[in-house]
Amino acid sequence: MSDMAQRVAVNDGAAGSKRTSRVRVAVRLRPYLDKQDEKGEGPCVRGLGPQKLEIINWRNATETLQYQFDVFHGEQTTQQEVFLTSVKPILPHILNGQNASVFAYGPTGAGKTHTMLGSQEQPGVITRAVKEVFRLVEAQGKDLDGWEYSVGMSYLEIYNEKVLDLLSPGSQDLPIREDKDRNILIPGLTRTPLSSFTDFDTHFIPASLNRTTASTKLNQRSSRSHAVLLIKVVKSQRGPPHRQQTGKLYLVDLAGSEDNRRTGNQGIRLKESGAINLSLFTLSKVVDALNAGAGGRVPYRDSKLTRLLQDSLGGSAHSVMITNIAPEYRYYFDTFSALNFAAKSKQIVNRPFVRETVLAPTIAPGKRAREEQEAGGSGE
Ligand code: ADP
Ligand code: MG
View 1: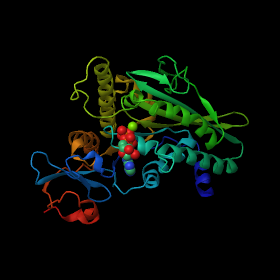
View 2 (view 1 turned 60 degrees about the horizontal axis):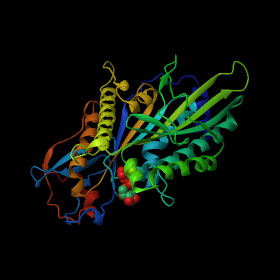
View 3 (view 1 turned 180 degrees about the vertical axis):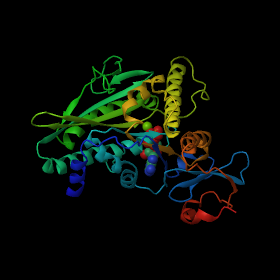
View 4 (view 1 turned 45 degrees about the vertical axis):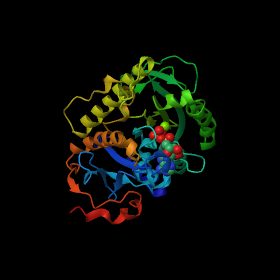
């Protein structure tokens, strides 16, 4: 622990010397749910090890399509494992003036909110990350003479391309600005100082309940807007020259990625669909451009979400996208497009994603889950 604190202290100021703009892509498959499978068809997706999975080919049910990602979290994966593998490693950077972002992407019903928020019994990424930030701050506070940390939170929603403050209900659309140092900020946004995790809970729980469970209508809305939690860590030098470093951590529960045009939406729904499609489509272009490497234009300005994340996605920021998928057939096409969204971003890196057609090793619906571990080399 103190070893890490020292390393960070020594490393002070060297932030950003290495380009780490690639967005890591993890896929999390939620457990199969009987009630999501009225026809009793069994799952159509399964894991093939720590980085691979396969999905049945709808054109030919004797074939599967295989995908490879940075990490694959199978259906048995616990909340703690997801946190340890995909999120915890990036947190020390935000105490050091760097930015980071974690997204949950995927169709409605696939587990985004479970991953980010979780429940009382199974807390998700948000709770664990905020606790860890306070733990790191306390551990380093002891070692860092002459510096102090302050932690604050903001919580907002992007709905229909409007930025709404969730800590100040009833507020109007807020403008996104960029300062001369290219930091992105929202001038009117509530920023609540936090002195402990309990403090965070006190402010966050009511605001998030408000958003997710107030009514069916709001439930629907929660799958049609992006919920963005910002944890800001400011490290300040007590004496002259009063240097300051600000690190930002964005934790984002994205709108459902299902194709809204297919559901025959009209009126306001259609407008929402357009906004969701625009922001998720732009996010995918941004991730592609970043993972393609230097050179190309990154279209941050094409949507509010990517504009807001501009200084925390790419550059020296550390980002991970957790694509949530569901195993039942009723999600098939949404799963397929979510996987293609996620895998596309892999294709451009040097380790291209594997998407080959292989014969399915005679899959008997319903008893697949247990066979998973062994399935690695059976693609004959
Ligand atoms: P989304 O936010 O993507 O619409 P939810 O997180 O609300 O999806 O998940 C849909 C349902 O599946 C919820 O009832 C949730 O509790 C359950 N669920 C999702 N992921 C898991 C998981 N990994 N383990 C157990 N249940 C899960
Ligand atoms: Mg949700």
